[in-house]
Image (cartoon, rainbow, N blue to C red; front, side, top):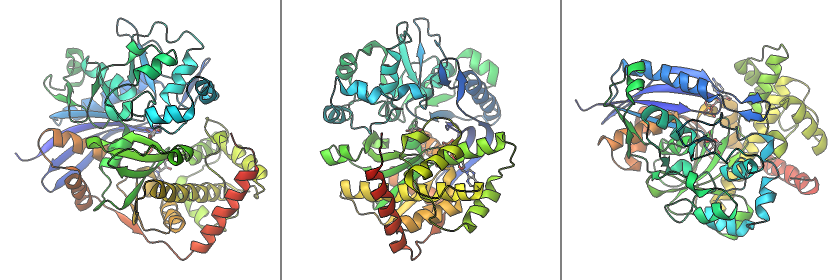
Length: 493
Ligand code: ADP
Ligand code: LRH
């Protein structure tokens, strides 16, 4: 029949899911088969991912998917983190979590060898301590890398366990800061200069390429047919999310809003100017050779960590109730710069937010509702600054902001973002990443056309909600100035 049926494994930093995707000429439908929580886990050496549990949950999802006889499977996840395999293909340790504080200080360490301008010219990436490059440089301190034969990013690691095939998908490889932004290959020379063994980097593969078939043990365990095709998708979750942005022309910005808020543009080629470097904007690889010109901003991590702390302290902290309460709070009492690295690690976030307010001379939020209001206004400000910043640096007109991911269910955040940006926000799809994963699989199997056709299918089939900006432009200008003036006088890392 003229219908394509596949399974998408989509692993976010806060939850993972396995969905069944159906695609036809006028059909795009997801059915969630399995969802599970995901969070940093701590051992004596720092923050890691419990990859054994993630792997088991993925197999549980695939066992359910097998009942629907999918013809293909695709895997995406959050970026930058990796597992190291030894000579026998055995995972050496649970992958480190990018929020581990041991990575702070590594930007300075690398700068001693390669200056910022040269590094940006090679990799085109935003300098963030989470980048694979900095994680690996931190690993040189201990002996973690000594017995490593192969480095596999998270989706590539799961693909390896599923199929036995080793490779590195290119959209995710582009987030490592060890990928040559102009070329089609790893930045081997850069790795060598920093003492990172270049033999660990696997051969690259592109979205749409065949990645393998299930190993016999996997098909026996899950019931998947041994001939089902594992397809490379845009395995960086953000790259998959951008595929499924329901844009109708090019004058759009996107915000992929989950644990992180990734705010940017889709361009034909990287922007590697000095101004772009100074603004710390990243050039990641998108589908079909596009550039994802974006900035990582702090995102709903702030809210997630608040909820976790309140619940651990015995509060109910129901998200819907808190958002309703936050909507009734007075506006703009406490607004923060969410780029503050103090927010990066897992921690008692309400206390850190309070301390940041004290340092900034803003009133300390006195209730969870007030704290949520502070977080959402601060995120909206980050959205505004980044949308305006990237549009200017890329000389691109932006008429609409597409906000996708779990954050698109947060109406208060969507409407604050519309107000702050002074632009309409189109919210949805919530599961943009899984949709992008499914669409790239479908296209690899001859089902759909170019990127604009994929997006038209999303726009025609998925529920979207439009938020028009209110008349608060002057107020937001004043808030922006208030935070900016302060940031330039307080010490910033
Ligand atoms: P990730 O892929 O990084 O794990 P998601 O895209 O799944 O993140 O987004 C998760 C976030 O979405 C949550 O932290 C939460 O703030 C938000 N979210 C999810 N459901 C709702 C909801 N019903 N209302 C408001 N916000 C929601
Ligand atoms: C979002 C994301 C983001 C990365 C971060 C590590 O899930 O992939 O694009 O920077 O996680």
